Structure formats: C-alpha cells, structure tokens
Image (cartoon, rainbow, N blue to C red; front, side, top):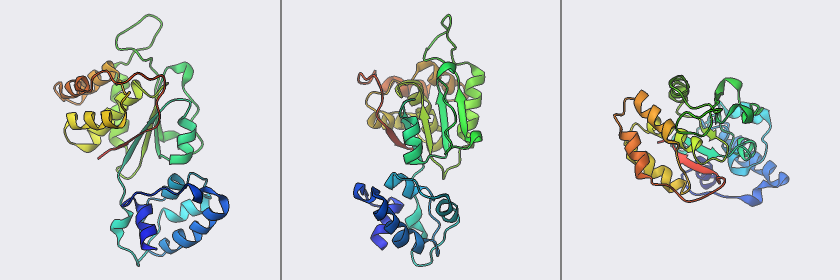
Length: 247
C-alpha cells in the first residue's frame, strides 16, 4: 500500500496503462482511494490524471477533504504543473489531466467553448493573433490584455494545475507558459526559459507577449534576454503535450 501511495503522490515514477481498464480501475479505487480517505490530504484529481479515465464526481468530492492517519502527509505533495498544448488536443488533455485552470490565447474566431470540466471563472481568454507587431486585419496583444493575463496568473493557486493552449501550442501558449513559470517560481528568468526549452524543443515564445510581460512585471529586460537565449527552436507544425513544473 505504501508504495502505491507513493506512486500516486508523485515521489516515484508511475505509469500503469493496464489499469485503465474499467474493472481494474474499480479495484484501484477500492484498494487505494478508500484507505486514503481515512486520513491524508491528497490532490483529488491525481487518479484521473494517472489512469486517464473518468472518476465519478462523488469520489472527487470526497477526496477534496480526504485524510489518512496511517501515512505521512508529505506523501501527498505534488509539484504545481503547467501544461501546454494545441487547440485540437486541448479537450483531450482537459479530460485526462484534469487541470483546474485554463488559458486560451488564440484569435477570436478560434476561441473554444469552456470545457465542462473547467469552471468558467477559471478559464481566461486572450483573443489575439500570433503576431509580434500590429498588422492590418489582425488583433495584436496590448497592455490591457497583458495586465489581465498577469492578474489571472498571479491569482492561480499554488496547489492547482494550469493548461495553456493557442492554435498549435508553439508560440503564444509557450510564451504564456514562460511567464507563468517566471511568476510562480520566483527564481531566475533564465532558469525558467531553459526549463521550457528542455521540455519543448520546438517552442517559439511570441516576442511581443514576452516583451509586454517583461515590462509589466518590472523585469528590466531579463525575460526578453532569457527568451533570446532559447534560440529559434525546432521546426514543428503542432505541439505534443508540454509538461513543466511551475516551481
């Protein structure tokens, strides 16, 4: 039981595709979830994330306030996560990763409906095109867009995860991911940029998004310099899922 709990808590690598079959998932819920409900606080959506299957709402509601006196509470600690994806893969990752917060930075005509798994007040929209300077017929990012985005990211709680998407998951969304990590990690902008590059070799964070964030966060060019240090990135038409610790 302790090794299973540690796997769920994230302290050891854990993959179990065979457990995604319905009968075996029911077994996991009885053998692992129910004992946990006697004492240790856990991040309630972890099973949905790891097993990639729907977990009934009554389990989710119970797990939000779960406690277990048999196991130390540090087993339940997990990193705050940032995920980046494309418009087309976003619904799938919302279902399987169960992020609590969502950012859609994409032009108005492609803005998606809020997924049923996400509360509307936790879905932030930035309706702009992927351009780095004003262009006729397109909407470029402006100061008020960035101020609203920074406010949303600063209010994003430390124990919740964030999914960001644009159209392809390469430019606008990776720029937001870099900003989010910079805000949450409270560390070096360069370290955040290098972590993003390691997680997403094809990332090309939009320069205008980065420039406005640098200005409004008072970073005196450090975020711009960190973005330049990332280089151009590999060629890609669409992202695979990017997973990045916010810490």
